[in-house]
Length: 477
Image (cartoon, one colour):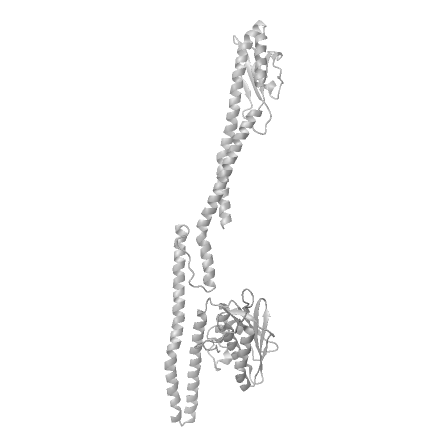
């Protein structure tokens, strides 16, 4: 953008300079030529006044002396010719030049002739001047001078070089001014672009300086900052509402569950006991949903902070934590990890919660006799984790909807879970600048892949795995 603006200003300036300096250059060349022509006409006219009596009386001595002195002083050849175009008197350097014959013909017809109209730096032709010699109204002959134009060419060239220098200085000033003006105009645009990227990357406190650029862009910047404040405030209010609502609902939900549980001993009807059990399960499911909403709200607030964790160690700890449930459901849960550490740079607890959610879903849907394998590998400048199961998997359309909030596959509506596990994983991975991929396994099952970037500047010394902080439960589906 800046380059295009500068080129536009420069092109306009060059066109203006050409429009102004070209007529001036032509005028200067014509002025220098007219000055020389006027001098030569005056000299030739004086010679013609001396040549009239000389031609009548036949005495050319004084005229010859004048021409000789003129030639020695100015190095300009001059000659006096009669009506038959024969040389009567000529100076030592006299040589006919191009245009002499035409000038003599006009002079013998009674006209004063001088040419050319203008001397250009690239033209070598001389200035030819012819004046008729009159005596009593009769043309007796003509005086012709041939002047070299070297001095005129030098003068014209000097003027033109001066104009070119002034033009170059004007162009340089225009370029400097154009760069400054373009920078002043475009600085708010660059700031808007940079701040937009910062906000996209999670820094919602970034704002544009409102005193930059022209008034129109200042108003745009002020509107952008107001919009960013409004969006940030809405997001904060939304997340705060979700967190507060989830927290406030836990106390009445706990009290409701206790009351429902206390009703159990008083129920003697088998159908009533079954309904009582379903009510308890629904309260437990609602409690899981509130916990997941709290986890999601907290995960979305982890915007800029990054920690370095050993993903291999974290994966080993999570596999060990889920082993009892896997054995209880007759599922084989295994880990494939490199021999050494695999460091990743993520938001706090991202690896823990993501693996918890993926392993939970894999164990939940694999069924008795199934297998769940967690793989850790250093790849593409970061750490890749993969959770593979032997469950029913998902269709292509279901894979595209799996990370939506509260989404659950139609055939698992009655299973435990809130439908927020994969949503939390996606939020944590995105906040860590990582990637979440899901595909159908072969021959069956689901393969969920995670990739987190490696630490900047290489793995740090003594980096340890992160742990789930108090009050932040592991994500569950």
